[in-house]
Length: 163
Image (cartoon, rainbow, N blue to C red; front, side):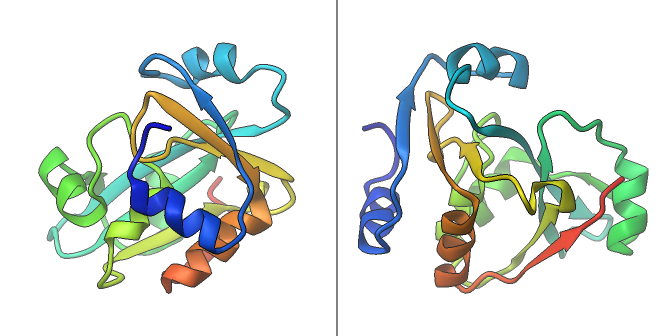
């Protein structure tokens, strides 16, 4: 399996089952759909933002079929102007590179600096798919198992209506 061994070890320790799908690097959701077609999962958009001061960082997970309105997200989060975080910040806080943003990167956020927001539309989605910290594979798992993973890490999260 491709991905950080610590991630797979933790998923196994937590008894979180997942399906592993290896594929070439997938730069877009459209490309991912062709590899994950038939796996009965909801693809997600994973966005990593920083506030205008650069002292707060946010991981926002949206339903893949949603359209993102950054101004609506700014309004909902009440954090002022947001911009996409730089690759350096992404590496520092999540241990990730561009194109591989995933909630699994929170395994590297040991100080719980990153605030996580989940699209309310995912609240009742049975299965989700995310990269295992590299964009050359995808893991599919139950939504409740993702939440159990996040709870184990100690990261707080909020469900938001992001539209």
